[in-house]
Image (cartoon, rainbow over all chains, first blue to last red; front, side, top):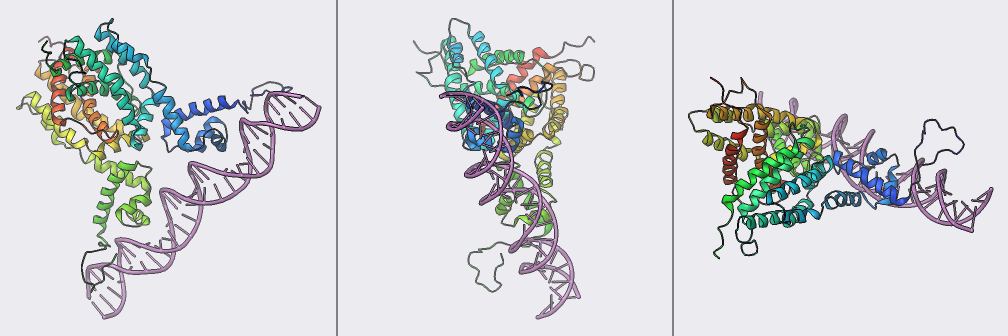
Length: 223
Length: 223
DNA sequence: AGGCTTATTTATCAATTGATCAATTATTGG
DNA sequence: CCAATAATTGATCAATTGATAAATAAGCCT
């Protein structure tokens, strides 16, 4: 942080030190996201400290344990990156349904198709913890079920209040979700660069999805 | 470990010991598959030994290192479980195309939609090693490209020899693959039991796939 | 039965690794 | 400029963990 007051300032050999606690904490959390995404949660605290150019015990000044740091990573990646506005995008009936879905899924894909999100989510799943099930329950309530309700309305079918979402309907939405998620898996877990534009794939999948879901929608209500 | 030779034989409290080397090796390899699938490759050799009811150094009698044992696991799961007969199923033109695809994908799904296969594949991917890219290259050559060739023939399009597989075509196949694979992810990584029959999902996905791929096939050849 | 081969165990090493605590030093307020 | 606060480091602990070597003992062969 400090530049020796009277030293000739060539290349600043030493970088800053003694940061403001809130700043240091943010820096550690940010680097931890990148670090654990790369090495998994078995990544060593010493290695993380080295990347941060600090000593390993300093981590424990800011986080009581490695587990607490990992919890922070979950929070920053899986909770903070969910945008509540997406729920409004899905349900805004002043916009055509297909456009809404394209809007939502493009933005959602942009949020989760990152090295950090995809790998951390998979690491978390393999470790269990129930984090994934919890996240996907949230996703189902805030997105999947809303999508189905909007489709029901669009095609004049019974509301999901009258007739709960069926297994087949939810399975169709899962299929769309799988297609998007798998793009991330190919890139960031299999290290296979995509040869196509993500948005165009998403658009195509949504078109296929909207066609495919019609046959599995419940019959029109008897008014 | 030993059963006193003249002891009255009630419940055989201790099991056998001093197995034939080939048998012991097979037992270790089998348990290692299950063990690493559960805990990942950071699972400890002592823990594995405990599950095998043997001591940890004995593992090193049969495998020179932990890494060698992991290689064996890869071999047994990813190489041995691929059935060459599948390639004949795909290309057997005495059978209708859709039936062939259903046949292949159902059997393939049965092979990979297991706790061991799905989790080990994901663990391997996160660790890198290029194993996944290698496997998927094999899958592309032995299955994906054959599938596309058969579809081309079915619809009277140019052979993949004349006109190589296009990005859009392969992307369609990836989509089908993703749908199947993701069923395994939901079950064995997210611990979310499926509410539907796998085969019926596969059948539906194949139907959708065959519809969706028509528009992306290259134009008919000018004969 | 007895001895020999070798499968298996016991003991142990060296390197890691999460965590703790006291010493150090950068920075601020007076 | 100096002293107090506290951010940062150095030293170190205890538990793990992959691996090795010597001791033990199971079971086959004659």
